[in-house]
Length: 472
Image 1 (tube, one colour):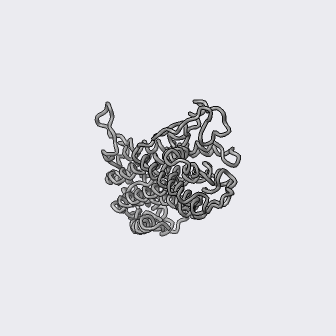
Image 2 (image 1 turned 45 degrees about the horizontal axis):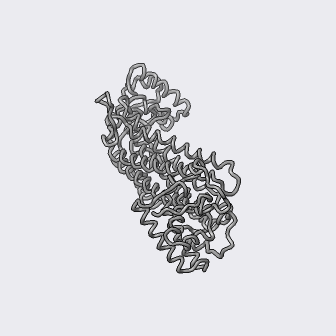
Image 3 (image 1 turned 90 degrees about the horizontal axis):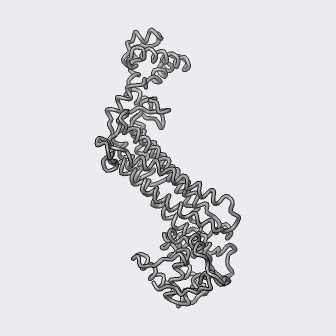
């Protein structure tokens, strides 16, 4: 790329007309965003193509000028894709780089591209386009994650594991039912993405600096050609709005919270005390000193990166909260946080998918732990209510005494003799004993959304339709 001729008495060929001196080196350094916003290059080129076409169609520039602009933009696109484009802090951002290079290539017609637009609406539009595309990629990855979870769930519909509250074994559930809870969490994330798309389809372009423009532009055409549904209604709001940034970061944070919770469980399950899972070697690491170790570093890194993305949301909230309308340079600080968050979110989703696909569940150990902790105590209390007509609070107290007896004898509830049980309450009979098995407990939880295998099968079928075929 040929260097644009510099004028030592001017700060910038783009905005330096009223300045006599160049910016200081420090000012250029803090003002430049090219190191990170060059990621918007393809979106800015697409935006410029559409804007130039509209200018020509509305006779604001000549068709011959538009033709040269389009040819120049094609050359610039090729240079960027082939890593031949040269970047400089002197030109601040990707938008000024493209305009300067275009003028260098085609001369005066390149200077006309910025007619009827400002960097304010240009930046807002290209960034919104980038977020819109990225959110689609994220949605696809979440869908693949749901698919991986559903594939594992289908294998473990009748696999019994302890369900936990307060990280204490509480009631028996199926492993499939547990995995499906994450499918539902991720489903809500996808619905949030779907809803956010409505607001990502409003186009800022044509708002110019903040007040609109006196040129006879067609904002509806440029909006449509850029994949938006409609122009934004208020030009001041259009250039100052960063709600879409906060909303996308909020969604990203919730997604990471959900992945992090699963990661935490995998870390716990992989520990020697639980031994519920065997981690795939592809997503584990070893120790530099302890050769026996298989560390759940993939899950730990996901857990760790969650704070990074959550803090990005707080970063932008803090930056925006005191800004007067319309545009302020503070808003340049929005992009690094978003780029970093989406990069980390995507790799975390990919790692989580690979981890779930390849993980091995130690179902025997899950079952053995479920036998501990008197997990069918609630089933006994429910039987006393339903079959013996005992008020629930009384049934609760009776069952508590049964648990205490089992503890004193170091036995499971299902290992107690009938006479032992009847010594606590005469309503207990041979029929009562069947409700103390883990299998009976699992099958009995057949309320809608429950863990009974027949309900889990229905839930898997419904989830496949809802999340893998079409979102409703």
